[in-house]
Image 1: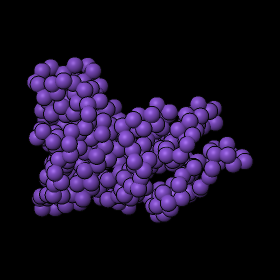
Image 2: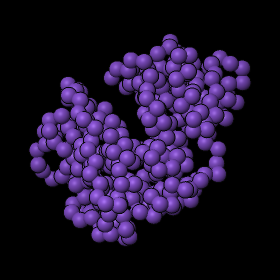
Image 3: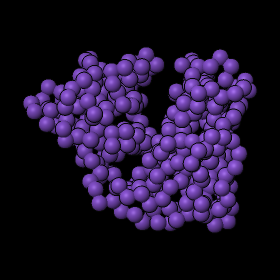
Length: 322
């Protein structure tokens, strides 16, 4: 991974320019593009920014050489609509090449198979931000699940869905100045019907394991606001395996002695190997983040974290564990 460049100066909030009758997607889109920049940035070694957002409605299918990630919008197991996030191939590959530590990521050339795989990873990272934005700005019972990505230059049986769509156009900006255009395409009926959809399921149970009290006191109230059952435990408790079996995810400290070894044991155990684990660091560094991932962490979280980041990470690990 390339060494992170110095952070760019803070920019103003992305400007939103909605056309008449298309404002419903605007807050969701701004949050999604900001989250996409935040999700992708660490893995490409850059502090990415999100750019201006514009909104329009259209029934025309997008054209051009595009990388497309379809998104299934569901409540429980019931799919209610499909949208997509997409980007020009010649632009999004700039992120893919940076993820691969390419020495000349901006040099125009044919895209390799390895670079196509990296594009898919970038799109999936962006989809996590869309999922969080949908929950936050449309309906917190909706789940946005990424499907198999495809490209218009080799589409096979894939096609953009027909119908009336609201389309947000935004970007993520590399400090060097390159801007990667991103589109979010959501059916208008999903914006209308999705806001009223209700889940019939319990939101789940999260274990705070060996987590410092001050951090646990910040995390627990946020999770409880979305009806998550939160319990605090220590790894040496009696019958702890029973508690692991009840949990849908674990948030644990990475700063205490032995906790990363505990993370590795959870990943190796027959009881807990599928349990998503978020390792929390008060001062995350590249070395400790890589070590946590090597020990089996599903995600690494710098704490304290704002509410949006915390819920985004929870949604990501729960989606991966489904």
